Length: 117
Image 1 (cartoon, rainbow, N blue to C red):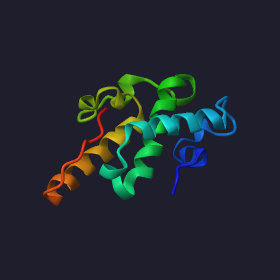
Image 2 (cartoon, rainbow, N blue to C red):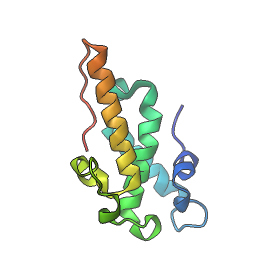
Image 3 (cartoon, one colour):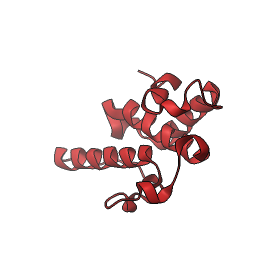
């Protein structure tokens, strides 16, 4: 299943119809996120990672809508996420990345290029 702008709006309603963000800009964030993600590594979780990373990208580019405030989201455990720790969407994406790493390592044998922040 492909991620649609409506999927991103479901987790980030601030980017919905009442905002200045066009559907085409949300789609561009989705496309950019997909360029950074490995379908092989993420497998069935690719769509999940895509929508959280796309929302993070939108939040960083539209702080007036997302209340982007690095100090608010930089909590223990999020600081090691680099700029991902600067939005609630990036924090969730970072958590998913850590889950993926645990899955790959505990699965044994396979190595992947894991997503980088």
